[in-house]
Structures are given as C-alpha cells and as structure tokens.
Amino acid sequence: MTGISLEDTFKIEKWLLHVDGSSTIQGNGAGIVITSPQGEELEFVVKFGFRASNNEAEYKALVIGMKMAHEAGARHLIAYPNSQLIVKQVEGTYETKEENMIQYLQ
Image 1 (cartoon, rainbow, N blue to C red):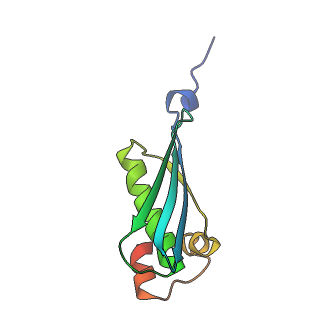
Image 2 (cartoon, helix red, strand yellow):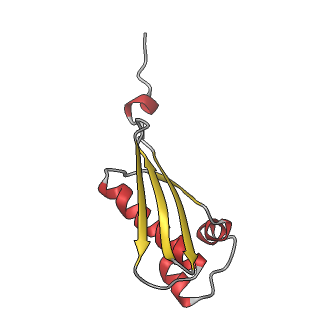
C-alpha cells in the first residue's frame, strides 16, 4: 500500500529575501534581491529620499524588501539582512533601545 506524504501535499514554497541598506554622504538606499521558490531572482535598487543612519537604512531595506516580496506573491519568506545587529534585534538576542529602531522592528 502506498501512502501519501503530508509533507508533499502541504509543501510550503519558501521565498528568499536578501537586503543590504546603506547610508553614505552621497545618500541612502538599499539593494534588494527576492528569489522565488522556482529560483527566479528579482533585483532592485532603492534610493531613500531622507537622511538615515546605516542601521535605519538596513531596517528600511528589510521592511521594503518584505513588502515587495509579499507583492510578488511570497507568503513564506526567509530574510537575510546584511546587518548582524538587525538579525540579533529581530531574533530578540539584542535589545532595541532607540525609538525609531523599535518602530521598524515592530
């Protein structure tokens, strides 16, 4: 008798998100790469129209990337921010103290 694998029946299609925010004297922005479960890559460069710290640019890149991935059809997303600080704050390993960073985290 052949069984049906529930894992195959309810296979979750995972999307990948790689983001890198940056803040320099010339301006602020982000590089965003969204990869579909089929391996299709969507690449974006976003220029921010406001002054930001590097950490704020990293958070903004993550938030924008998550929204873009959702619009592309992602429902299960694995995010890879370039900032170790952002990763640790999202995981809850590091405390977030600055009010604007707390808002991004939420």
